[in-house]
Image (cartoon, rainbow, N blue to C red; front, side):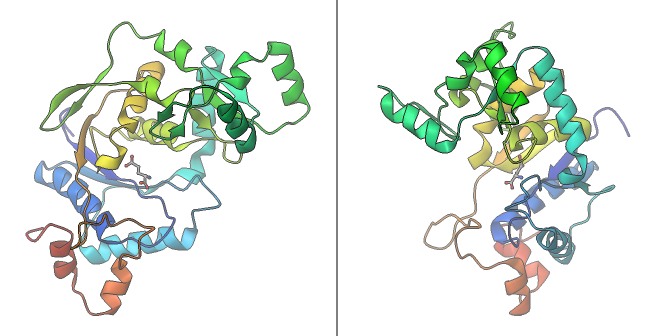
Length: 285
Ligand code: GLU
C-alpha cells in the first residue's frame, strides 16, 4: 500500500436501521475509496449503551452487503475498545487539558438561566465553566466520594497550545479556518460512557489511517473540534469531504428520527439494490 492510498470509512451509530440517507453516505465513502483503488473501512460507533443495539449493528452489515458494498479488513466496533479511549483521555489529563465536571443537566440549566448570556455551540448551550473553577482539593474529594463526573476539555488551555490558526482541507473548497472555541469546554468523556463521539471518532480515524473523512454536512462544524483534538494528540490530519444531505420529495431531510423508509422495509417491499442505490443518489454505482 503506497503512502498516498486513500482510506475512507463509513461510521454509523447502530441506533436504528439504515435508511436512504445512510445509503447515500455509505456509497459516497465507498466510491471515493474504490475510484482511487483505496481502502474502504466500516466502523460501528456504539459507545452509547442506551441508544445503540447489537441487533442494529448486525443489520447494518447485512444492509450494506445487500446494497452491494464491500469493506476492507475487520469492522471496528468501538464498544470493544474503551481502554483505547481511556488512554487518550489519560494523556490529555496528564497535560492538564481536562477537568472533571460533576454538574447534572439541571445544574447546568440553572446556571445558564441565572447568567446574563447563554451562548450556543454546535452541540447546544455552552457549558458555563462551573466545575472548571473547583479547587484541586475539592475535585479530589468529590472523586474520592465516587461522585459521577464527565471529563471536559479546558478549551482555553487547549487553544493556548496552538501556535497559529487551525484549519482543515475540505474537498472542493480548500483550506477552511476552524473555530473550536464555539464548542466551549466540550465533553470528552460522558458520565455514563467513558468516552464521547468527538474523542472516539478522531481517535479511530487516526488509528485506522483514514485519509479522507466523508460524512454529512451536518457534522461539518464538528471538524473544528476534531482538528483541535488531532493537534493536541499529535494525530495526523485527514482531508474532509462533507456531502449534502439527502432530502425527500418535499425537501425534508431524511433522518433516522423521521419516518423515512428503512432499507430493509424497502427490500421487503421488493426494491432491488440497484433501485435503492439510484434512490440514494448513485444511479451508476
Ligand atoms: N457515528 C456518527 C453518526 O452516526 C458519524 C461519525 C462520522 O462520520 O464522523 O452519525
